[in-house]
Amino acid sequence: MHPKEYKKEKNGTGHMTKLQLKNAEIIVGVDFTNNAHVNEILNKANNNSFLLYPGKDSFNLSVRNRSETKLFMRGNPHLFIIDATWPCARKMLKLSKNLQNLRRVSFDNTIKSKFIIKQQPDALCLSTIESVYTVLNLLKESDLENCDTEEFLFPFEKMIEYQVKCILNPDNKHYRSGTSREITPKNKYKKKPTVSIIYE
Image (cartoon, rainbow, N blue to C red):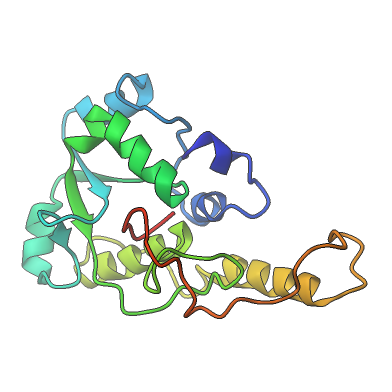
């Protein structure tokens, strides 16, 4: 997780994701090349580490069958996810030589993000918690995950609902008087995305 994201303890989707999972942790930094804890995970015997990041050589969980996925992610799999803004995520991967060397996994996204209060580079880009939710469900289909995802997005959805109410309430004392109260429709995105990734 990028340090800037780590400061967003109340509304960061990376924090929400971690709280929803038993076997998850947050490692803060920008360049993880010499990060002792990351390298300990990568170098531990029997660990099989992957990076959730798109690319032409990534293993697409959406199109692979159960046998292929189980064979690819055999052993003791660890999934690294970069939690940052779009430009920061690209920089983190560029600097982190050890993460660059990991085999990548990805998925085909067919839904629009519910993060309607935040502009995304592309209509199919998802927040961290939405991406993890998608991956967990795909791994469940291959019998590689068994956690309950039925209410996984509930905290995220409640946060969005609350923030929309605050924005639309002109008498809310917690918002600056100059705050725009217009909710941007999800079909309005940046014309030239700086990077195409599936989480932030």
